[in-house]
Image (cartoon, rainbow, N blue to C red; front, side, top):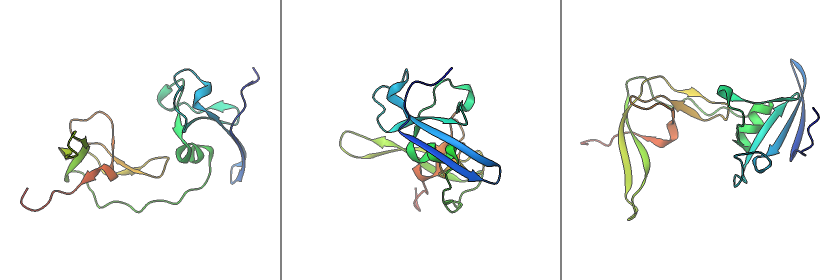
Length: 140
């Protein structure tokens, strides 16, 4: 079935495995993507990108470009190993005070498709961004 929606971006990339054509469609064109102005659904060589079996995956532009095959610079490996203790930034209270949760790295960090480093933490189902973790200060 021919796709009637128009992509915002159409990228043709010539690489070692041959030519790939990727199309990035605005999330707003699909169910569940309403109000996600900065997210895209990716189609590579006429196949929709569907991580973990999701029917609709909406990605930020930087991650969508990596899925499409656009080259990106690797971030340096973080100084974090399995078993290291950190604190995870959860957000901020109404008065602006930072809210943290104690965390222990369950795995070594790995780099995601978007180039950002992630790690699984004890007691959490989903991986956390290493950028959201902080070392404990001395005496805490």
